[in-house]
Amino acid sequence: MLNQYDAVIFDLDGTLIDSMWLWHAIDIEYLNRFGLKPPKDLSSAIEGMSYTETAIYFKERFNISDSVEKIKEDWDNMSHDMYCTQVSLKAGVKCFLDYLKNKKIKMAIATSNRYSLAIDVLKAKGISEYFETIITSGMVGQGKPNPDVYLEAAKQLNVSTDKCIVFEDVVQGIMAGKNAGMKVVAVYDEASSETTEEKKRLADYYVESIDEFIEYYCK
Image (tube, rainbow, N blue to C red; front, side):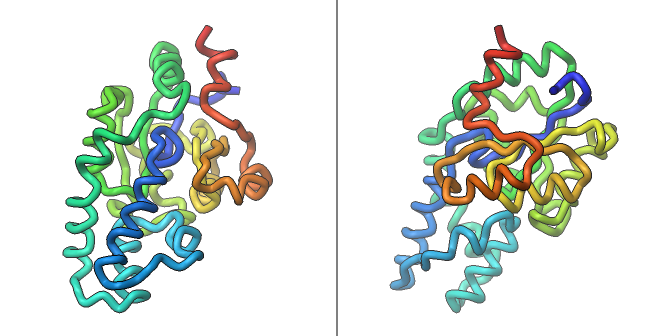
């Protein structure tokens, strides 16, 4: 499957790193400061949003008086140490990245996360050197399912969209990759397990884990 592509563009949270549980915990702790509990639809409502879009959503939906920048600063302070010390790589990631590097397939990150957090966790997990560029939704102004973050990643890699394949764990991200004209591999993640069937329907391929690629590409 990979032989026909010149670049692989990865989402970060839930795709390469097991981090969605942390953001759920932060949502709970943050809203508790205001005497609030996260509504059941919160995760689905903010899925794919950029960091700034999510902060705006919180401010408006929960009537938070703090500025958008203050909300993001609070999230950064709450998440940074945990992000670099308690978040782990998902199964098979390092081996798969080694394979792609050896095959001279270009790699990039296209994430809704904040750039500083993305680069810090990639460094902490020892995989930052694999990626030629890291593009965040905040850099392009719109979150997923808008395709801009994937289009910009392809542009930075100097690879046409039809030669890029995307790895994503959530519906909005899969739609962003498809909207960019790229093939998409949907990756299972526990945090979005209730949408697995929809992910299978939308994506070109589906894997329970990146670990599945080891049998074909890493032996």
